[in-house]
Length: 425
Image (tube, rainbow, N blue to C red; front, side):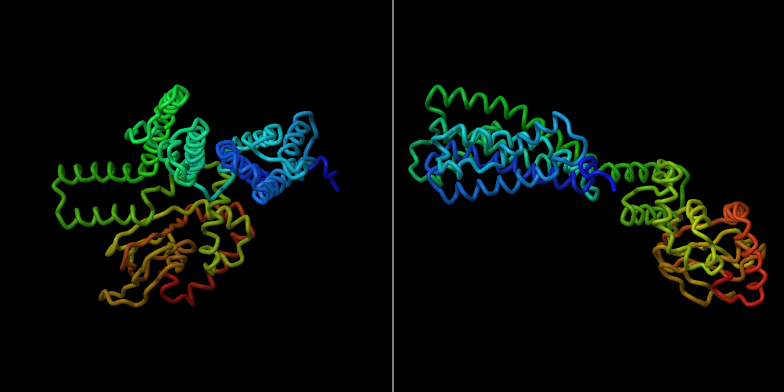
């Protein structure tokens, strides 16, 4: 077994470690300014004990990961920092927060943990990048407001109010108004330190909130980029149809197609996504998405995993609007279809409905095995998302796997005499 001291952290362990440290950093960012601005809080033993225990749990738990991986002087320094933050010094020395600065000075080191917030958000796989940046701002911005408010209280801002709770709320109000540079003048600095502090907060607010607003605007544009791209495509199609005098009925079908494409896929293109990936990763993703579709096809029942892997990567998406003829009776058949979403009607010679196919069904598989023409017509009853497997790609995969090739030839001969609708469509 590998030596535990030399075993690196897993991704989940690293995420857990970052979460504990970020929580300790947030606690320090909230608690320490509050203690400094409210000296009476330091005499509350029960509250001091609770905060000490919180630091012990959050920062102390992270030290359990300290001996994972290779030990170096940097890791020893981080371990010393974690221990300094975690040790319940206030409880051990039975001291007060407000009078023993050297005790809470160690807790200031916990603010360094806030630098792990961005790394933690990037490790959350289910979180979109834009949402991650918004969450980062959602944590940093309230802390900045809180620090500005407690600094204002330390300088005696709004000292005319005797109610401690009201003073805190008014300080937060002042901090937001000043950082946003929209101060209303109802709470104003009166001393030189307060004036200088207000100037610094306003200058910081111009840069800080300017950065926040620009990031939010950028994020909103990114969130809407797909829709904007879809609208541009629709505009080009509209100009095209107007220039070529396309009939109104056909125009409505084209518009309905784009509307469905946006509502169902939000404008993304399967082909573009898959082509941006390397072949092996593309095959793994396609296998995850389409394994169940191929598993239902009788002619592929005995196909091995390598055959299925080669086949799924050849599937191509197809979107049909209501009333489209997917395949017509008597036409050459060289493709089979898998229904992801939608409904397909199988028609007879008089356009009567012989069968209805729904999500997860397939049809046209005999086109992969024989050169016989279609024996029925398939028409879409609703908008349909299909995946298409063509005979050329199928044959190429079969040739690379001789055992599978011989088995499908035998199945083709057996099924020609026993096939029924809609499996031989």
